Length: 499
Image 1 (cartoon, rainbow, N blue to C red):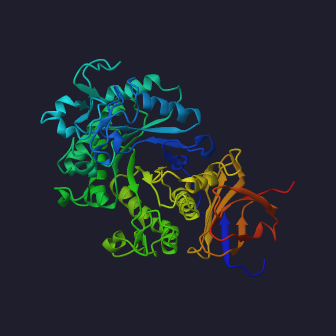
Image 2: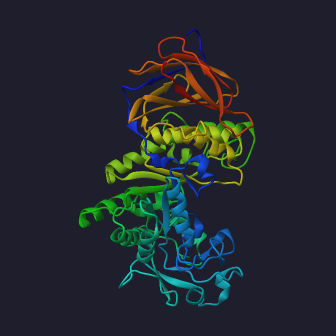
Image 3: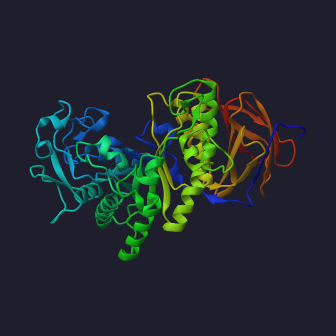
């Protein structure tokens, strides 16, 4: 094939792994008809004090600790959630529903700022008591009493969701930050013991009503939460994730069944370029480079990013193998989820590059579920990266469900992810990412029983957040091609069998 800058090798006889379809999720359902998300999440700080009986919520520290109608002006029970389940189901997606674990949820939508200025008894006048289980029949809620029941919430959804709806339940949101984000209902620092007790109590209530629905916990905000539950008073118990998994395993052994199916974490990288965090909106070349390299911290045990986490660990973060080792040692069979993640630059090609790289890594390393969280209004490039895996031709063509062995001779500049369809193994799809600031010539060799001729090609690059069909690339030899990748680009390559 001649001299090339980078050599890529894809093999269908090694390193095969099922790709969980649930990794292609988002918070909310932005343009789901085109982006083809597999999972939609209803989450975030608003859900911690959400009252499903009337859709009232408290903004917490996001907006003056105010009770209001931000989520929905409707008083119809669970209106905002049922609408979300129906929309997700219509588009073939699953829905993650957040279950509040705190002792109080908003009673009203009255606004007027901080509820704590409503008097010393504000918890009894502006909130209702939140309970895991109700004694008696689970039916239409009694909006006149002082209680909100979460098992009744689950039963209400189950009875009214469209037939065949796939629903998962999340154990609240970022509890490691409650004393800051929701000081109106949980001002004290959370302890290890308290959080597990709440997880077990509420997850058990969910499972009693909807046994087949998966449950996600503990929904941490970030790395210090993983390690110490944000410096919890009882952090001397050790690494929090390991301790939490130990409790979940012991609980399952006693019950004879699981109540926690996914270890659910949030991941907003702390990596920096030129002293700026990559999740900040910054066009600086150093930030762009750091953003595009940061996905390597998910898997590369040789990569050292500039961040306090790398300094704390005194070496590579190597996040996914690190977390999987904890799961394997403390509660095997638990799936790994990231229900919030973002690498910044969603309005820039660097954001698309990082997002496409992360989605490929999640599939290759066996992440069980993931939902992207938009950090800014314009995330058009990030969603274009989703389409590279979910709808690259605009007609529903997608990346496969089995990851293939794929290697690159220059992991700093070019990433490659390859797949086939389990039901149609001759259909191979690749995503190739050029992170370099200049074009790269790439030699691709595919080892597969099927013979292919040309490569169909779709390209995302430059200043347009659109995947554009490009002319086919003819083979140079048997299942071998030379491709010129544009600078800063994401390419979808589809080998075509001869007619």
